[in-house]
Image (cartoon, rainbow, N blue to C red; front, side, top):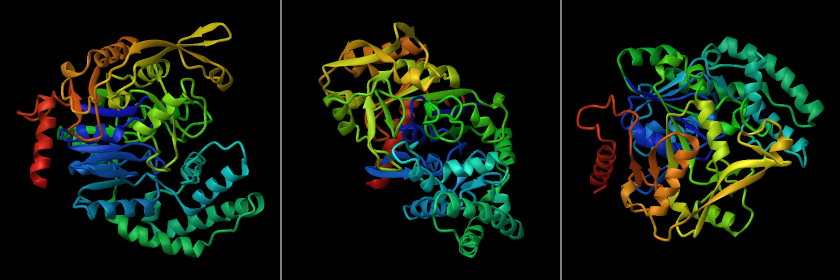
Length: 455
């Protein structure tokens, strides 16, 4: 039985939402295993844009969606997102959405400290979203976090909140010179969240195990990208959780033997939001062109994404760290019209060749990317539905990516729509029902059903 993990190979924003939405047709359960509402998955269905921050992308395919124990969840944001989806005809009841009782809560003091800390850094911020994700993970690791299981035990929640707020208000007032927060106000707000979300909270590790026993197909989605991983990313310009595929097990509560495939999402160029080293960044007219054509603005923050050429050093690093079995290339159409394309094959630093991403920020910041140049193409590829119909330079570009990282390309996206996708291999093909084993045919059948339902 195929169980597939989808991860980003760069610094996030690779287009994971679209690929998860595409593959969710063949899955029974979609699980989010880390992160919070500091990331958004953007999907375009029937011309309408959906941006999910917490609910797994599979909700648009009306699959059972699980918020795993590795997440930190702002319950107010979650409820607003569920209501938005319900208003557009999606089933969002407890039979459709499961929340791990072990997932940690984001509380108002997490957001307040996040914002105050960034402001205090002045001209040297980390570049957080201010959603409280980092402080919530700090409390988790510091063994003072509050989980959903505590929210459902009101006496325990009151005791833990009171104890936590004593420390947080001292920090806010004495160190950050900010106003203290009211325990009564937080308790009133979170009591309503407890009442609303109680039916959704369960032991999701047991739920997932039962799904596996029934031979359900599981799709695991993360947020951000490999190089924002707290351990393996460009620290400290990273997120506060493990974004790599291995955390799909830890953040869900299953063993590693349950994972069969890891799909690495690769944007056809490279982007990064916020601060941190970015060897292939382009600050010229080509960088501006990529930003404009790719609509490169953060789906959560609206911040402009920095753009650059595809970095094979970063990609190979991600392939190793995640055990990637197949690649999905997104936004290939953004490269339409460029006469020449470049791929960074390695770095140079003080006369030395580097083939891996260095751990030292000083070294990485000082690296010079070494490029290989390939011909571009002039025609639009947004309407192409098979690899053989892509311009020869586009096919060569894809082939070179495979050669450099040693992993086959399974999926190619040539536009934001679900139908603008070329599927060479479906990782669920071994276990999909009869009649759906040809992934491309299955994807096109989805498009036909969507069009007929609108028609």
